[in-house]
Image (cartoon, rainbow, N blue to C red; front, side, top):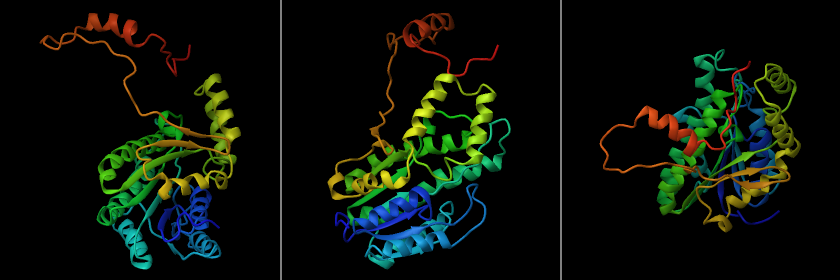
Length: 314
């Protein structure tokens, strides 16, 4: 048991299993009191079960801290407010928020339904925003707080998960924005992309879906080699949970607006999006860009080493 988070009070969503559970226990090991929030649904978001949240809260209490379960649906705005207010009313404050809850509804975009897109975005992106929205009100008033959001390397591009990739990309942008809005009030907001072995990342369904995309030529050999290296680094979330506890601690008070990658072998920092090349002209020119000029300049000035990531099949 450490004491870096002693006296701090944390909400962890998705705390019943996998990454969320490991983080809840990691925070508790450093002395934080825990609200273990988990609806207890299946990977696709269906169903409910109180036992995962109950077990995590029980195991946190065994570490010597106070802990209670919550079974709220993070995609519901009012329920998200109840999750945050439960932490504040039970323990006296909300000092740490870890947004981990998520579901998967994988499908190629031409087969994906509106419902499948909406459900994934509702849990991942809107759910993260919901919890942040209510936590920021209290954190602003108290002049301190730590928000840690869970994104994915899928935000940089994925196949078969446009809903998931879009939601995780939104979480990155949300993290950057919150860092700038809340930093002046003593509140930090960071995100991490875990390389973890959980029910959402490994298993027969995931392996089958990956094999289908490979057979269909949707994943290049180079991309596949990179994925295999990434999967080798995958680990039980307990390996990198201490890094999240570190981000939640006073030692990380000046770390704000960062997106990290975490695994059993790597802690890395994603670069912030930036313009890497550009061509300009006299800003006083009133004429529109000329298409012939663009056809010449774009390949010459911008796309010097560019390769189409998914060229048409011959």
